[in-house]
Length: 445
Image 1 (cartoon, one colour):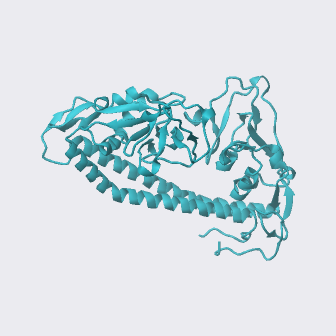
Image 2 (image 1 turned 180 degrees about the vertical axis):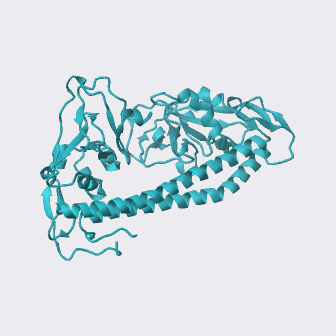
Image 3 (image 1 turned 45 degrees about the vertical axis):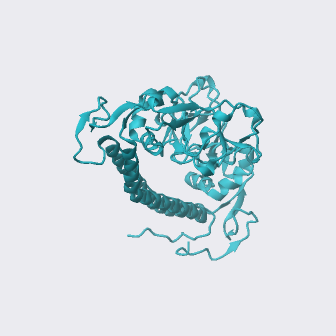
């Protein structure tokens, strides 16, 4: 923030997350500028149900797609929302589930709906305050929940929280500055996100060509008999995956028996299965007993695992190969383990299960389902091209080599996005707490 000047004089706010504020700013509780709106939708008179999406804001329910909570059948218990109200998902505020509603409508009764006292504060300046990450983290300390990002806050937590408020003139100057600067950052982020999409499409194209056409441009071809595969090399087999693998759904471990001791064995749950890797941010354990009959569910290095619920997410298909560092672990229900036969290389199968061909196979059966789910039968019925094992290994090596540069570019784009988001967050925080003076700021010509 060195490129921006500070205010001439500051005073102590005596509020840890806020720090010193400009001398002329007032420090007041939130209830002085926002009020809780708890009006109910009597008789379900308003049917325009609204949702709050993280990092998006308030949208109409029908525009959000098949994600998140479902619209209740009875809207009479919902809260009334007016255009210009701030709406906060009390459970997910800390991960960006808030926004200013552009619509009149109704929302979940667990949401917090706030009206802004516009004599004291510009409505959008109130939104910027609630967008301030240090303020979000401060409010999250009052939340009740097992997980930090799922800790619910309420109006009683918000109303007494103190904020720094400048004059209306300064509020408008800060808003003009932030609107301009965050729009530039958002545009750059959008370009990087588009680059990531193109790089992923390129990698999928490399995979698709290698596993359907092989590596030899002069290979004799034959009709595979499968429309999505087209022609494949004449010496390849085309067969259902289930003939060459064994698929084991996880065991139904009872949650009442979960342990928190890392001396016990980790449970590999759906939440731990990411795209091409296992994630252990959230771990529960199981205490094994002699002759407990669970040996079949002990994972081995090289096993392939797939998340059966919501298998396809924005980053790709939730399928990964178990590494030595993931062990020991036991397979929980809603996750399936796949072991390959001697005719199928595990890395080759992993590549196929990570491809658009696999998502095209199961997507028609999951479209429109509230919680998309695939079964062992769907995995087993996936028709795959099967070259010799040596050729499978050569294809894996080729795709890995060809993908290395793409993955490097993907990583750089993701790092760039993370840095730009950090800058955006820091800029908002600095502006709404007066760490920078933008009263004389002018957009570059």
